[in-house]
Image (cartoon, rainbow, N blue to C red; front, side, top):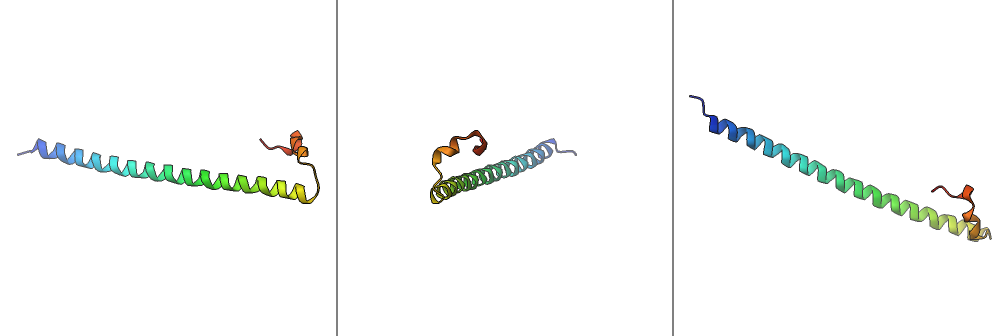
Length: 73
């Protein structure tokens, strides 16, 4: 005899497992994205500091950075 209850429970258990796997993967993706954003922010900050330092060492006024050709944003 066919047991409908156990079949439904089996399907729901499988679906629950997939939901948990997807939640884990989504959280991992969010974490990686946050790590990449943090790393990119650190690189951008270092670049800015390096440019300022280079301008200071070369005695180039920092207001030259206001030139539209010098800006990337």
